[in-house]
Length: 341
Length: 87
Image (cartoon, rainbow over all chains, first blue to last red; front, side, top):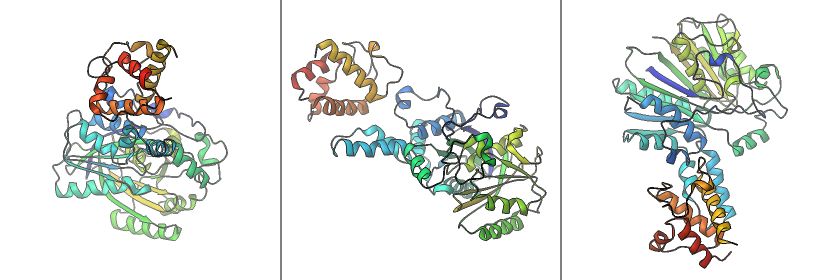
């Protein structure tokens, strides 16, 4: 499968060349997305949208100006969680009485793909994958299978998740976010459990045609399990099956949580000659954050130098294969192998 | 409550309920249509306004035909609220 167009909204500047060079800070252990003015979205629709739907549609619509995809495939773990909780609270506050429809309409995970279908009058394949920390990977897999079957068809693939008070507080209590104030610039030096929260939307237009493509998805693998030995086995098998061992750049989902570091170190040790990049100090941690790594890889393949704070070890600016390894809570793991052609 | 006070309160409630982030109370004219032209609200907004009347003023509109006569503009809504409010 080949990636032809991409767009992203996340907590750093994406519109300007070199915008990633300046790392924007977290606020209260949360990295919130920088939202554009959403010029292409009618104000009547925009005012009803929750943040996830706004980010998703706002990221996708610029890609769909001159393109009508044959499928809209979105990965999101939580969808419009903030509106969902607002709606549930209304049920309690108003004693199961009369409820307003807006929050309900916007709160389901498939509201993003649905809204995109409605706004672009697209009645093709429209699906949302909600596999928690592997939602985006499942959406990619779906698109890859469809692209193999119909190489000339275009598919919009996306990864979207928002910070909602509810899921932030639940994960904070669960120990997945740091309890002490943590600046994102020092995220990897914290040596403590938990990370910082993040959010964002990445959209890709893909098909099975290599001409003028930005990147090629060569392979993807995902698994569940908390055993680091399983991670080693899966990574080794993946490398053996899909690569010749030459991976100039490894991008990991290291997130400052010292409990997850052994997984990432395992991967790094298996690729001792690779440069290593990290991105969660820019995006924060969220279930579909792997989309950011893929988007950064596309920018790298287009010739844009990634910022110095991205690199943990070495520096890679060539068009060699890039491996992305991410784990969500040490339970869900994915490997994504990309190359320029 | 004075009629002008009620109008101001209703305008603020409409802005809040419908999330009209770029609209101020003074932008909404008392005799301006709420739907179509004027404020440009639509059918989903009409349900939000019916819920607003129920929650804030204890007015339950059961008949859609009745709703069409009430939700014309600020003047018609305020007249109805003054006559039928239970809280």
